[in-house]
Structure formats: structure tokens, C-alpha cells
Image 1 (cartoon, rainbow, N blue to C red):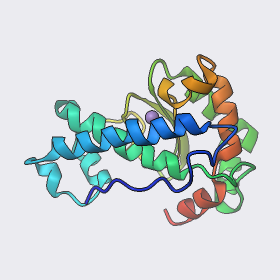
Image 2 (image 1 turned 180 degrees about the horizontal axis):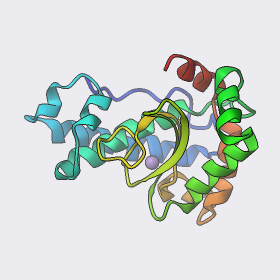
Image 3 (image 1 turned 90 degrees about the horizontal axis):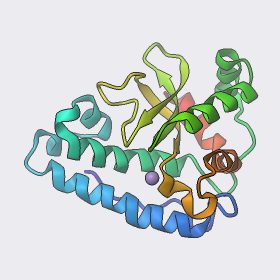
Image 4 (image 1 turned 90 degrees about the vertical axis):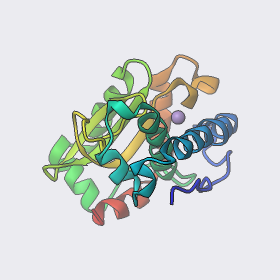
Length: 201
Ligand code: MN3
């Protein structure tokens, strides 16, 4: 059920914005470890019989720390890899562009809000663009490997865009300069895929 999927591009596909060494360590070491620890942690629990990660997150709380942290790590990275592509960058079109303009005022205003969510997340965590439970786009951030699908998330919704702001995601190339990494991220965002995903929500 909970498979370890291949990275949808080569380690160097996102150069120079995200370097090949970071991608290799991030995918093959960090992501792989979250996945294997998650699979081990659910053995013999109710979570082993669930059909999807959203179902796992809908039932998870602080009492299941190993499943929460490693399941979050496994799922969040899958969302993150899919948000990026070598032919990424630019701006979204279609309904996603229209709704971003309507909710945030402009694409630039959305980018600033998202970049601030990423920059201001203290310590390790994630920045998100989600479709919230009221059916609106919303920017938020989560600590550690939490995500907006978890039942106790302060902002609940379906992830559209995810950005990993753990130091392991950028330290080799950007060291302490997280805002530079966030700036670079925009050059690889796979808006066409995200538009499709949003239209299907
Ligand atoms: Mn990571």
C-alpha cells in the first residue's frame, strides 16, 4: 500500500536552483528513512489497514509520534517532489491563477505571503498552499513533519503546493540563507501539474 516511489526526475534536474547533491541526500537518505520508519511503525496497528495517507492523518495525534513524524515525512516529501520540475517556474494559469488573484490580490502578493510563511517558520517545517475546508485557497505553515491533513492541524485543507524548509533541504547550497532558497524554488515550481491537481479537487 504505502510504496516508496521513484523520484520523477534526475537528481540534477533542478540545477542550479536545487543542487544534485542535496536532491540525492534528501531523496535517498532522508525521504527513504521516513518511509521505512513509517512502514515499521504502523506494523500491527490500525494504520496498517488504512487505504491512504490522508486517512492515516485524519486519525493521527500526538500519541502516535513515530507514525505521525515519519508518515508526515514520507507523504510531505512526495507532495514536494511532485511540485517541482526541470521545466517549472513562471506562473500558473487557468482556475488556479484566477483563484490566486481573487484570494490574495495578485500572484506577487501570494508569492510574498508564501515566502513569509516559509521564512518565518521557526526551526524545521513546511510552507503550504492549501484548499482549506471552507473551499478557499490559504497559505499556512506547519512545524516538523506535520501537514494540513492532520486532524489537529491549525489550518486544515488539501495540500496544493508544498515547500520543505528543513535545513537538510537547502543547507549544502544555501547554508543559513533560507530566503534565497525560497526565491530559487519559484524557478522550479511545476505550475502546469498543480493547475491540473487543483482543477480535479
Ligand atoms: Mn525534507
